[in-house]
Length: 616
Ligand SMILES: CC(C)(COP(=O)(O)OP(=O)(O)OC[C@H]1O[C@@H](n2cnc3c(N)ncnc32)[C@H](O)[C@@H]1OP(=O)(O)O)[C@@H](O)C(=O)NCCC(=O)NCCS
Image 1 (cartoon, rainbow, N blue to C red):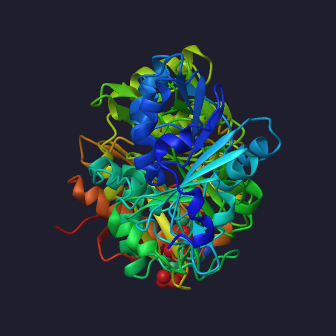
Image 2 (cartoon, rainbow, N blue to C red):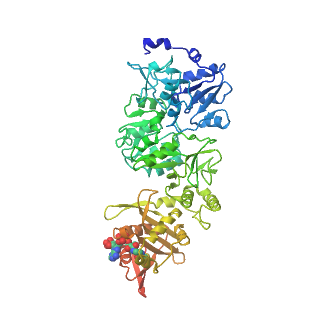
Image 3 (tube, helix red, strand yellow):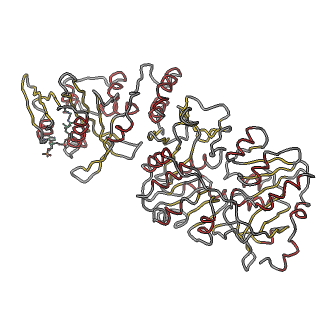
């Protein structure tokens, strides 16, 4: 397996380590490609070393455990970190070098970040002498090029992979041929919160999109929720074995990718033998340096690119943080800013920050007034677009701090909304008199979200109004002609200011319900019609009103709003609707008369009062 010509390079670990000088920086392959056998021998070598630095993208192998033992002989330095390394860094035992991973290879090449020795983990060479970096290409080639000395563990259990993963055996100064299973890691299955977040994220993913996936429950929740999607592509820093099912059931086929068509593109993967066997000599996967994969320009060349980044916190202005002292896996700058920016620049792309609304068993809100001290911002206020929790989707792009704060409070955990509202008021983020229905019944809100088909085959969305719709409702009202305003409000020159519009957003499902008809995807809705009722508890008959944008009239939007408002009212045991309609308002008359309900009316002063009683 090792060519005769290279056999003299075969050394024991201690002989191979003997050529490492004091004070040198040693690059080591990451994740499942950490050369387990070699690195487990390093501790004894360091008994006589001085000030060597172990440089890694991230570890969950021996290096992670060794980091806790750092002393004046060696110290670990990570570009990214997982749970345990996070603790070591927080305790000051290991170093963290914040960097954009697409820039790390250039820093290494230009000696701005110095690497003297590379220890890599590769497959056996082919007939032409090429070994494969297998499951982790990341920074390995650049580190080998920059080093004065390279040690390779050649392992027949490292799968050969495609892309830019090949490295010639000539590049190695010392070879340690050891066959051993790769380090394995399997994420815990997604819990209910992660599944719901995944479903919310999936609402933003169109067929034919290319997505970033990653490591952790939320990414796995997203993969599960993609089961009804078509032609999904993958361009990602890393992936786990949970993509195998989505590939086998045809959801991920990479057919619509605009670069690397037909290929899953990544810089590394993390999993168990099942995944390693799946990627082995599989032309469906291509692994490249993170200089290529994580470059925002490369990312943006994928049309409909959707980045999905897991944040530890999002503040009310939209800054997203990966917390230095958090125990959450997703920590460190990593690839997040690159994917956020690359996806936003892609044609039809979207950037999504996904997080559960709380941490520490529900005791702490992850939507906060300010980021915690020590938090690393990976999406600035100017970068952020969609934020998704288990409570919904907030689109912050192009929104003022006032609109952002409200939209984020809506997707915070209900038990923290009041506190966040008060904090936002004190910071002058929102109006002093701002309220939101704190008793929002999330299940009801979800239950009344639906789609409807118009006469011309166009599909529209229907959903209850939310406080963050205030500006859109204001604009909708001001877009009405004087004639429409008169028909609807029987008055003209009405000011639809904050104090008038805010109460219109206070849906409580008891006395007040308002729904909108909209076009556009979630978070990017354009309101085309509004219907609301106020119930009169003494009669249990609700006062009802409708308005449809002029361009959308006579296409069935009014009928659809009446149908859905009727369903909601019936579910609340309301007996019927009442409306006052000007005699000349033929459209509204027709809308009421179209229904199969019993209609009663009276006429006075050019005004019909109509009662639309639900049949029991
Ligand atoms: C009343 C209003 C909400 C109806 O909305 P819409 O989306 O056009 O309603 P639809 O397309 O579902 O039409 C419902 C029925 O009314 C009919 N209709 C609509 N506009 C009409 C008009 N100007 N004259 C006669 N019939 C009309 C439609 O043809 C349809 O009947 P059909 O199914 O038998 O063809 C809309 O015209 C509007 O916003 N008007 C201004 C505000 C207003 O008057 N609000 C009512 C105060 S409570």
